[in-house]
Image (cartoon, rainbow, N blue to C red; front, side, top):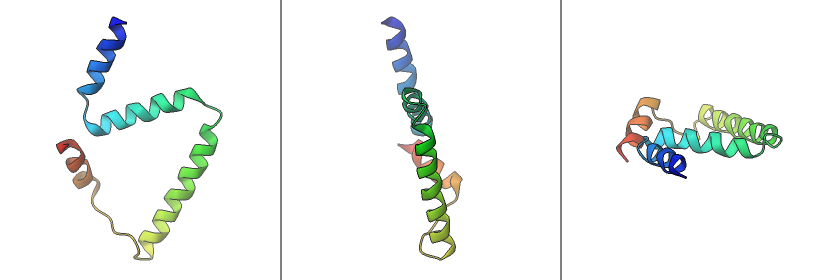
Length: 73
């Protein structure tokens, strides 16, 4: 149990982006078989967003700006 507390404390000290990456990795570890479905859904979503951006229906910000905003929280 002490190891779990230590790991949790380390996770709390992470930036929001680092926490999100950790959460995603932990979530994926539960069900590898469904990962292909999730990947296919995300691919469709990403392609849809690219099409919307290229059509001028979606705005964008530089990655560095988004990362800076996330790390401020």
